[in-house]
Amino acid sequence: MKKVYCEVSKCVGCKSCEIACAVEHSKSKTLFIAISEEPMPVHRRNVQSINKLIISDACHHCQEAPCVSACMSGAMYKDKDGSTQHDEEKCVGCWMCIMACPFGTISRRKKLAIKCDLCKDNVKGPMCVISCPTKALSLKDVQRGEL
Amino acid sequence: MNYIIIGASAAGISAIESIRTVDKNGKITIISDENYSIYSRCVLSYYLAGIVSEDKLKYREDDFYKKYNVNAILGKKVVSVLPDKKIKLSDGSEIPFDKLLIATGSRSKMENITGIEKEGVFGLRNIDDAKRIDLRLIKTKSAVMLGGGLIGLRAAYALHKRAVNVTVVVKSKHVLSQMMDEEGASFVQKRMQEQGINILTGLAAKEIIGDKEVKSVILENGNKIDCEIVVIGKGVQPNIELVKNTNIKTDWGIVVNEFLQTTVPDIYSAGDVAQSSDLITGESTINALWPNAIAQGKVAGLNMAGKNVKYSGSIGMNSVEFFDLPTISYGITKPKGEGFEMLIKKNSVKNIYKKIILKNNKLVGFVLVSDVNQSGVYGSLIEKKIDVSSIKNNLLDNNFNFAKILPLISENRKNFTEPEYDEILITNK
Image (cartoon, rainbow over all chains, first blue to last red; front, side, top):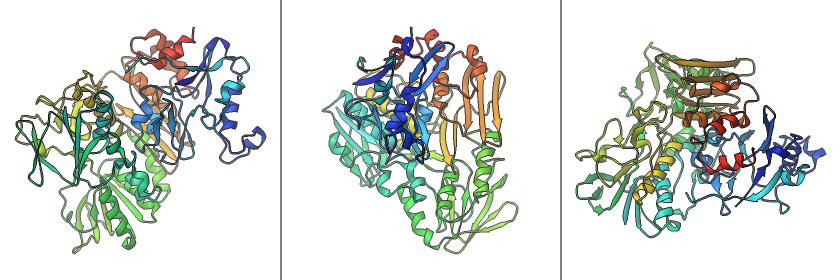
């Protein structure tokens, strides 16, 4: 399985990833139209900082995903490729997943939980990686031991 | 190996999934007294509200049992656990097992109140409850919820959405008294009242009156509320009757050790019926909640299949949203005794409330209203029992997020053992 890694030494906090993410998850997929969409598209990646350290963070597609265990409607699930995905059709907006995510990477958009889906519907791959001007973000294989 | 699982809700289903990660070929039989596909009882109030269809109650595919090679006996009740590794069904038949999981869950606690047997009085626990309430709505103008806990409020919200005039009768001083402090709960209470739900606190019902059917509820103070439906939301009670007259130790629920074993070898218990230790307080208790049931089912299943996995303990936690106001409570929210420290941030205009409870500089609980997005980060600090002295002053900052705990993760590597933390820290040098 692959996930998006952030190389902290290269991240300058420009938030290009946040914008690319929000646009990719908008209806129009165009920045200038997306900003006037209702509801406003939400980015699933967040640039955060502490002291001088900057990190762009999003769902880590955990091996033992606490959000999947906590989800009482079956909306959050592990996909065959190992990624953690969310079926918006099934989500009831109870926020159990938000309560469970140790990284705080799930947010609310109206009544739906929103998280990184690795841009699974876009053959080009995660748009945050493509948009990152310093190549801090990259899509790499995950090396995790057995449970 | 011949596994039997009693109960087909969160813990039972989770156990099947985890057994199959270890034992692909063992014989698994699941027995449930409900003759339905796998459904989520936590979603029932959304179904009753008309927000989701019956189909959406299913949280696993229809072919789940087939896919996991499970023999499902549905619509039959297990009446007792027998010595010599056998169980007995309501039809008199007996089934032997090598490993047994008791995941019989809990039921609505019905109060000892005059008139409770009348038509129109319900719990809200099973799909049948929801369907019966739904059927009665056609002749319902008003409903009374007895109990201001999560069940009572969820039922109130659902019926309000169905244009029923709803009154909630709460014995405590405020709603959600088991779940959070008075101040946090006041935001929820106010929002519900503003939206037209009548909430009476500090009051109990004395009698339910009517002939065959419910006509009204008489309160302690003599007031009478006319209604066609009464929903009892007085908490739940574990279904332990089947282990009576066995050597399986019970207290409030079935007592289990850290491996989720009962006091009888090869018999395990998980979910709302299992009394295990609380991760934060260490007390032996039942936190009858979905995520705990799933986690327990997983651990019990692994151990039944021969692994040796410890359960870290259950957590009292809850998340709910009424009328666009989300609320999450976690751990100790109403500390009793000495040594607790409280951090509070409040904005009544914006409906923001954040309260963090610490003991010995470690988080032990929190209540969040409106701004709940970072609750899991707080939760991980609680679960991993991290000393937060160095970031205590930043915990309630508006921009508090995962990055703020990165130094704590580096300092406490032995507590953050999941591979995802390694993946973050690899690039964080």
